[in-house]
Structure formats: structure tokens, C-alpha cells
Length: 324
Length: 139
Image (cartoon, rainbow over all chains, first blue to last red; front, side, top):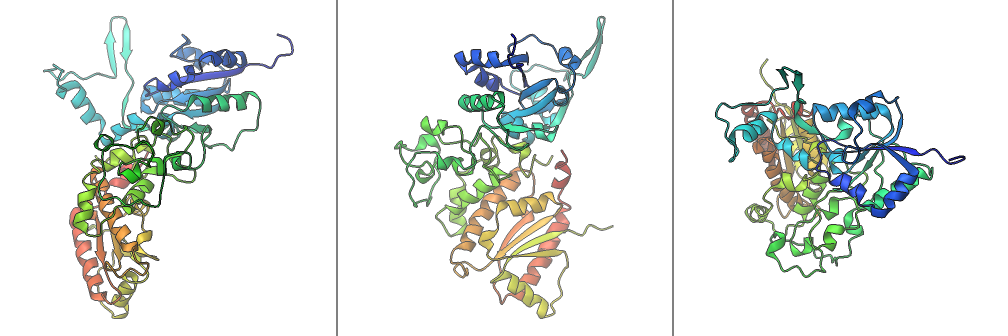
């Protein structure tokens, strides 16, 4: 059409992902028509049949914005991260996995050998007496078959390539994505490179409407099903662990609205590099005991500190992985 | 070359740093593996300090504060104790031997106890060997 603005070239790619972030984009529902009116989707494996080689043939910086979701687990993920970095003007780490490592990041408690042993030999439904393992290359009559290289560590996107912006969440709240998209399309001035966008700067507790008092003194930690949640009082005050105090706001405290405590998927608030240590410090401070034995007794209910405090952020925490 | 551990000690100004200082002014001899970091209160010590020490190549971390009930700021040392216990659980999960992190109460007059603590902790860490967590931090 004459005189119309050139459409934004948008790409969405999934690496070590569950598909939820792509679904969060689809969750715009009928606003998808507004999206495609303003943007050309040039690469989106879940929805379009555009191939890797088509991306490779694009000129550099051809794509205006790429939303990259999923962590980097293998060499295919790494290759696509580097390729899309070259072909994109703006590369956005979309969702917890690319932002912080996400749930796949929990594999950093293990290593390649342990994982392969579990998957290919030890799991209960596996029958593999000759311990067959996948090979990176295998020659057949038709040619050479190859599989990506499985890395020992899971990494976030920023640990592999230079990232322009981060949109946190597991998945990011769709309304926030639309806000970001509208801002980009309208040509508004973008925040400084490296910013977390589509979210607030303060902690969840700032947004959450549950009632809080100064009475945070815990004698026992409970799992959510062990209490009769009154639906109104702060989870922490009821003894239920909630990552709210160390988690960035912006999701509309959607889990709390569903009467579940926050799990920290939006990552740390602004100015904090490692969300887990801050939460550890906060949790420990509210334990209402003075003797070491009593404190240890209360802490027995924090069964898995590393998994709880770093559910979504293990690869990008200070201690990125278990020593192995 | 024989392994000589690097140990960082977080000492509170009012009691434990003063106690360590007393060991010095009294000309007590003790192992030189410890680098002291003075904080106002052991309640200031947060897990980030300890974890950054380990990932920067330190082999053992000592945390010292006033005896329970004697904290200059009333309750700081209790907070330190609670954080320490949770932190020990966490580092054990991450493959760092929980013996590499030690908490001890040292009062301002306990110079001798500080010297003995440094000696025994240095021995413990020497036996445990270098802390390998730094190598796994390479991305």
C-alpha cells in the first residue's frame, strides 16, 4: 500500500523450551490481527514452516525484533542463538528460560553423564541391555545423520550471546507483551539496552493485595496444602514459603490470585543479581527461634533450599551449577 | 607446591574483629591463611558475601560474631546464625562441603580462641583440599 509504514519483521524462536512462551504470544487471541497488521512474522517454528536455511540466507540485521524463548541446552540451541543474534536488530530474551535459565536450568544439578545414564539405562521403562547411547554422527546409505551436541550445562541466552532486552515470566504475562509490542511499533523510545522490560522494578509484595502486618515471626514452615489458607493473609505470615519478596512484580500476582504462593518466575527485582540469596536471607531472618537446634528443626521444613530459591534461575545464580 | 588454603573471615567490629585484633597485639602466632573482612555486625553478613567468596576462589569461609545475647545491635547475631544454618544446607546441595563454612562466636577478649580457631579451621580446609567451585563457574 502506498504511504504505509514498512512492517516490522518479527521472529519468534524456541530453544530448550516447553512451548508455553509461544502459547503466551498466541494468547493475544483476536489482537493477533493487530499484530500481523503491524508486523511480518518471518520465522516462528511453532506456527510457520520457514526453515533454518531461510534464516541463514537472510541478510544480517534483517529481522527487526526476535523473541527468543527457551534456554541453551545443546549445540542446536547455541547455533540458533548465535544465528538469530546476527540476523536480528533487536534480540529479546523472552520468558524465564532465556532470561535466567528457567526450569530446564534445574538440570544444572546434574551433568551430561548422569542424565544420559538415567535416560538411556536406568529409567524404569527403559530396556537397553547393550547400553546404546545416541551418537553425534551416524553414517547411513542416504548420507550422514547428525544430532546436536548435548552440553554439560544449561545456560541462559545472555550467557551465550549479547542480549538487548529481557521480558521475564514463565510465561510472560500476555498483556505486558502487547504493551512492549505496541511501544516498539509506535516508535517510542526504547529503554537502555540490557533492561528488563514488560515488568515493574519493585518486588511482588508491592502489588500483591494480601494483608500484611509487621507480624512475620515463623515457628514452622508449612506446605500450601498443610494449612487452611484464609485467602486474605500474606502467605509468609501463614508460614507458607512465597518467593514474592525477592521476585520482580509485573505479572499481576497471578499465582496469588489463584491462592498459590509465588514461585519467583519473574526473576529478581531491579538491582538484584541473585534472587535466591536475598530470599534465603529473608526467610532465615524471620525464623522465631534462638537456639541452633530449634532453628535447624524449623529449617527441616525447607526441604530443598537450592531447588526452591532457584527454581527458575539456577544457571544465572552466583553458584551456577552443582559441583560435579 | 603444598596446598595452602585461602580463607576469608567475616568479623563483626564490636566483638570478633576486636578479638582478632587482640590476638595480634598480644603477639600470638597463628596461621596466616585468613584474610579478615570487618563488618559492623555479623547480622550484615548475607549469603551473597559467602557465595561470592567461594566463586572467587576462596577455600573456606569463617563467620564470627558476638556471643548470643551480647550483640551490640541486640539481635544481629541471631539473624546471622539463622542465615548461616540455611546457607550450610544450600552449599551442601551445590556440592560444596558444608564444613567449608564455619560460624563461631568470638568475644572482644577472646584473642586466644580466635588464634586457635584460625589454626584448626586452616587444618580442616587443608585436609578438604581446594574448593573446586571456581572452575565450574566458567560459562
